[in-house]
Image (tube, rainbow, N blue to C red):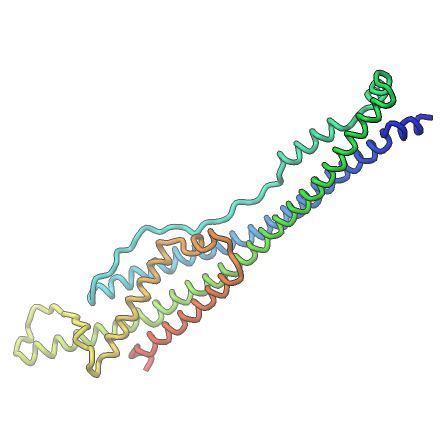
Length: 297
């Protein structure tokens, strides 16, 4: 009898749709929580690489630019060394508790107790009760569809953020390679070669003093690098010119959060390809420096 009344008034259908809403609420918590956890794992990995990048910038690049600033100051004006700025880490993603609490509040509203069903039926005509329940069933069906879409869209959005974060991590790795490569080129090629170029000008200065019979001069050495253009020593000029370019790059790496600025817009695989191309260009520039270096032949 009770089942027949529930079928007549639409209460049976209402209970089924209410149970469906509860199932969707559980699905929301389960799937969104899993997606948040995956995203946070990716964010942690990204942050680890950012910390490695910042360590390289602080520990290696600063020493490089100080050494280069000292070496290049003899040959021209160097831009001053600006204050260091960290590359930024990402904040962890949080489960959307407010949305979930709102959903739980809604479930409490649609959960009629047996007493509420009795009194609704008692004080309403069967037709009146059927209309009320039918209207709620229609609303429940619409809300179930909306909740299903919200679950799918939320999980999709979180998955997209994870994909982007993974891509940003790969870009960070390439950038670390670039920064490390620049640091090693400065330390192992450029700084040692400056000793050769400096020695060349020191020798020229001594020779000039001897030739004009002033061997006991004040000992000041000038470094007029531009005078070597179109001479057999032009190689020194080209080396110093390329060294200035590396100094500018190293300063930018140190005082500018280059990667953070790049990643502030929507990162795509094109950005990864761009960083890789820049890495190739750096290799070419470094090869030019090596070719101009006397110590490398």
